Length: 399
Image 1 (cartoon, rainbow, N blue to C red):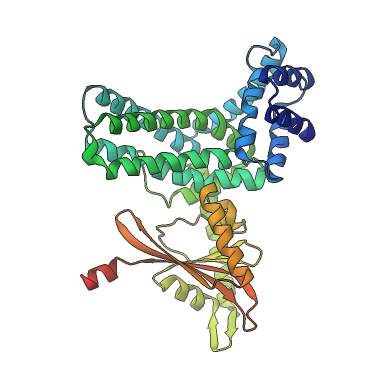
Image 2: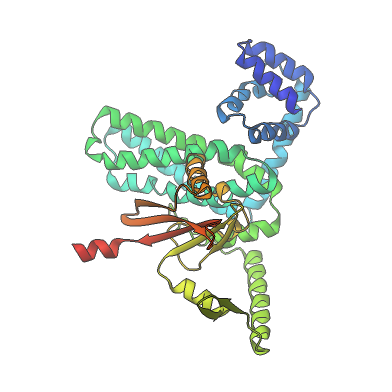
């Protein structure tokens, strides 16, 4: 199937008429499960086929639903999609389930978008309404941290993370840019830009409801949803939606925590707490953990194989979901950031760089994010350390 999909793409790239390729696609793939086609495309993506090229195949796929498709083929494709939508709908009905919270946020966002578009027709949107719309950053961050990477890593479905994640970032960045240029709100150009980004937000709601959420619902296990529910608690609410408590997840997490506490207590009672011996002294495991959590930095360590191995505990401006541990660091970043992270780690590994400082503003505060190459005494690369420091204290001191 992969070679067949590749042949369609090559024919399009060589200028063959779309209608001809569509006709062959319908004839040759009439009995193929759409999921098999999707997995073939994932393989091409992993082999280096660009997102832009794969997106051209969307027009070929449309033959399953339009014009040249037979009624039987349309029905087959619809049945597959109905299965996904039904799986999502069932989870959305569960009080406190992550998909319910995402869906409620989208419903609230749709109302904000409709109100903003109506205001734009008659006048100028106020700062409060614009700031409400910018809360979409929280919705997108939670989706980007908890859904996209897991769908890609565990189930090989990378389309959403490769395409939708980029659009999320573009929407968020455009809203931020418009907010910085709010002195131009009266101009036709500014209003046109806002109207365009509102339409993109509407399209993303549709894609989440019909592509992302159904794929997650059909693939993620209940245990995985419990972990997503747990990690989602670290994020601020948006659009006034406070997710309900999911009783099954709370019970599961309580049982898990109780088991861990019991094992820890038994370990301490026997007096056999693990002691870590270092060249300049030793610490018990509890001492080392507490010390790392006390340091006023967000600490992350990525090992030599590019796997997330450690985050210190505590509130974080840059979220670190527990599900990201054991996962390749590159999967935790949207496409436009991933290449930068790969480049930095590549330079560390090659010995060309030892550290990379990045200053940034987030939520009105200044942060210093520094990446360090971790090496042993023989200067062999062991991994990458990331430190995030809130620098507002320094600004206040020098002010």
